[in-house]
Length: 178
Image (tube, rainbow, N blue to C red; front, side, top):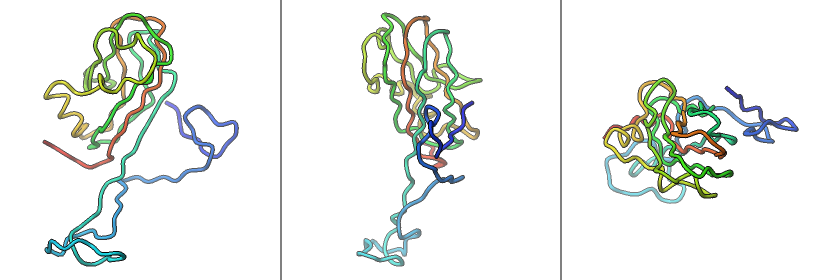
């Protein structure tokens, strides 16, 4: 595993150049936490009346240098329990002529979140439209990753030259269930 070490130079890949701050729970933003039962929307500067307007903040984790040297690649991306995946991008920086990639979890299903079809690693650029859930189980896993943290695993059906950057967007601890 790698750690995020902000504020050092030269900083490790994936670490910010500036010091950061740490929150342990979901970050909530808005000025009215609970509704007063009316359908009145908050006015400018209002903090105590109207409908609730607090929402969750979206988070992101990314890892550069993911590759298909072996058929599996355990990333350093760990999504907190009960989070909702909102998007997954895979930036292809070195192509591989053939092969597919599954995005799953360490110790679980190789296609827990999604799997990209044949030829998806054969062109430079960003994969995101092919990295969507396609089964009821995958859709449920995007809605709520479950009751434990999950570490992202890439599974390739062929080894080769592929190199890329994986980015996972999520809403931390929202505890959705469809």
